[in-house]
Image (cartoon, rainbow, N blue to C red; front, side, top):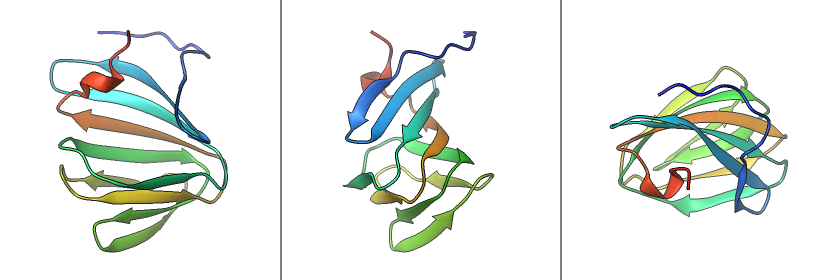
Length: 108
């Protein structure tokens, strides 16, 4: 699968958080997140492994019992079924890959 850059296609995920699926295959799905300052990603878990990269901004990411202050160029990997959350400290852009594919993130 190949996808050209577009400026649209974002969907509201939570208040202050938008996402769009960039591309997906049989085993992985890549998503771009726009995260607004002071928004909160509440504590949650899912069966998907989640690997991320912060393009811009700043956030505080909790993975299990560890807390990380994340800045541009930092990356992470969250194992499936591990609780995680984030406080968005500045407007941010993150790219994340999920495996297996999240059916709920597939384009309609």
